[in-house]
Image (tube, rainbow, N blue to C red; front, top):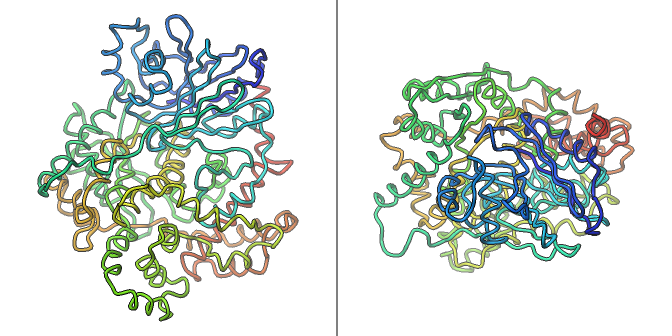
Length: 637
């Protein structure tokens, strides 16, 4: 696990960065790799990295080059099938290390930019092809690892974290108003946008090629197969066995490590099953980590403790207060760079800190809900086929009945049930700031006329050209949006802030394809969610785990947190600095602050978004920002 950064110059004869600047770019993300660093600077390109040593502790330093030094790479992540790749490469190449990084350069020698199709893992990779003066950037299939790019007058910058580009003077941090509206709509910034003007995310499963002083290609190299399950009728038992075999293979592949390893355990089905599969092959008690909240009935610590006892793990716990530590917000935003309106970021940062005291790598159950139907919106999507069987006149009467009006959960659910438009359907269930409220919150001069089309396009750009059920389409959109741009983003940032590598077995691309090819009734059965996973888990986890209902603790704790820190929120959003920006209508903001915890979840989400947006500008954009001071210190260190 590492962080990478660099710059490819338009002038192939130019040295794009001086050594001190590149070291500063690496230093500002030292948290991603406290063990080592490395740089390459030559005419046309500069690449740097920070290393968190996980595999091949002695000989795995980067950058790594091919035998003839024509191909050089830096990469962030893990290649889980590296041992099989090394065995295949050994007959054609001289292998100088024992790790996974070296497989990249030799695969590139054999296959060119399509080398990535042979990898199984989570990664962000930069390859410099010296004879062709070509830079190749690529990102893993599911977007577990981040990679940002910014095209400038002088060339192409890339980095695992945007602060590297700021530290190198490659970009000037400025707010993109359109991205701000996307953030207020989704509660995160959907790709390819970021809040930083001129900086974008490289999409998951995408390869970018820079050659002849320009981007000559940027294309996807993978899409999930919606028929991976194969033709013909299959029994529940057949599907249970294949699901379990794929997950078991993924867990075992992700347990490869030369440093201590554990698992984050919530006591829910997904993390409990991953823990159970780890215990099958571990020769010692698995290290498990859980977080709970004092004085709250929805704390999951008792559930996690029972699972740990049943599986015989070496269990570690942290008890904290749900409404404490607002002072963490600035540091969390510094690491996130792209705010996420979800208080889970606090909990995940704290559990990452707890785990890092004992291990360097932790597995997680994240991703199961998005591929197997774990949310209420998936029940709605499943039910939509019933509504679609209604006569057009009946559906028209529903539209005119008034039941679909307003922002209540019922109204939004009905709109999602009846709509044929995938963007309208997803936004009905998930949108934070409704279209009708934009003018109430934003000043006219700040609102972008392109916002509403962009908000819809964030969904429509991912709609596959396949005849899919509404549920399958919704699950796929979840993998491209909320999973990649929200959940994996804060998982990466909050864990790497503590120099902890987090792996996600449910994000294995073969497992994802299988799950997306399942019939709807395997995901939602008699309106019960994740049915196939529940059946496949029988005998591996307790009946209590199988019966346990999903707890959205942080979602409902949002109002508590905002009301508890009402004075802090008011000071940030209504002070002179915020007023001088001319972005927000202050009466509407004051109304949200006064009603914190009492106006409903959507109102609390809107208020949290506004707080994060203002804090983000103070942190990164303002002349006296923390980013300006911190990045300058990194360059001069």
